[in-house]
Image 1 (cartoon, rainbow, N blue to C red):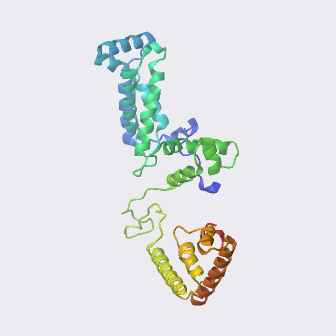
Image 2: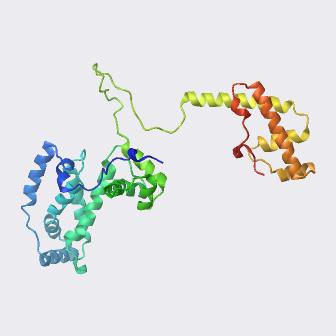
Image 3: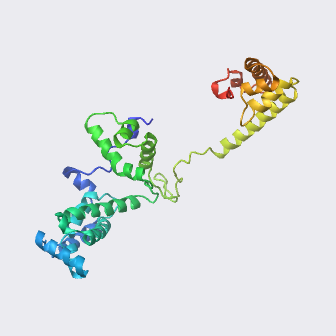
Length: 322
């Protein structure tokens, strides 16, 4: 389980007004485009409930593009408002506004005034859906959320973490998993993904005065290194040779059978089956096996003196099924 310090403060939680300037910081180009766009948006007046319903029915009956355009234009302010709420650097605000406009168009085409809901209320859901999808797909080059559970954690894990910290509770993967209704492993994996920074492969090291490319960083693959894999294969091969030599020195048929069909077999036989094969009791087969393991350990310890751990008592993992 990850300790609490491994979890950062809520990164994706909706910012409060006092932090709005930090989260909503705009580049000069983005600010200039926003000012121009707001001036264009203010040219379109808001519609009353009656005007909105009449235009919506007219568009649905005749597919009039002018009616759809008026409905869309009158709600462009809503897109700007929601886009600013969801804006996080390094994403550009104008990109979010453009994506939110697509959601607004879909909402206008599916709007049904007979349900007694204003278009702005209905459209907000479509706009947020398009904004969240855009954020998910463009937050990083390496996709963070490819499943429903990952998308849920991407948007809600840091928010829930912030709530727990605000209430004075200790934030742990198990507690977050219980609050969000997901597996603990999913929480740990998403936390590790969010904490990893993307780095260009040709990025310059900060302390390199000559401007030479710094060492590339990548997410750990979890696979052993080449040296570790080669060492493991060599040790396995050496161990198998010693066991093979030990088998050649066995003269008891029962011991050879147990070694081949139980201790070294991929699908080991049970002691009951071995006892029936040699017409002895299961307990007698177990005694023969215990003596065989003790002799093999003594042999391997003698011929592989560096591996003193071979002299330890066998654990449950070393035994075949009974």
